[in-house]
Length: 128
Image 1 (cartoon, helix red, strand yellow):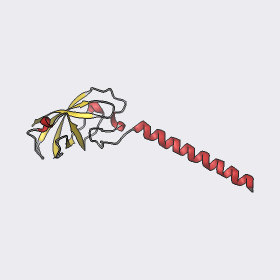
Image 2 (cartoon, rainbow, N blue to C red):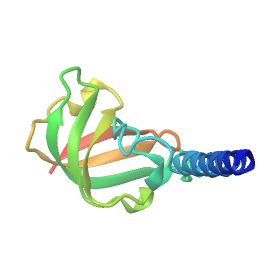
Image 3 (cartoon, rainbow, N blue to C red):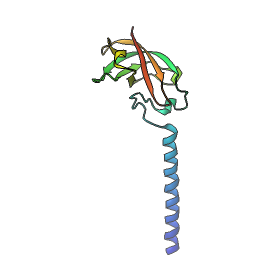
Image 4 (tube, one colour):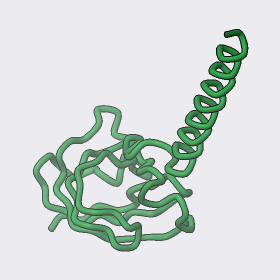
């Protein structure tokens, strides 16, 4: 009986350890949140292996502007350069002046720069 209990514990421990290791490696392969969320960290599921300093332009609608002027919520078209589908997300602004004359509801063209594998920043916003 003792042998059966010991064997069961060993098997259970190995199974749990393997599951935990798989879950950990799965989490690491996909990295951080889908958008810092989004906060400017879009998440590695769409761009972790991409080279930093990529740039893209995309049409979007402004959904919100952070009170501190550091980010905006947008609904953007697909961004092929980053491998992103169309989505709503929050993106960091390079500085508060980037959104100086922008209001919620504006249709705009965003210029986005990839700062690192998971960090993106809006460098320019032009009203359409």
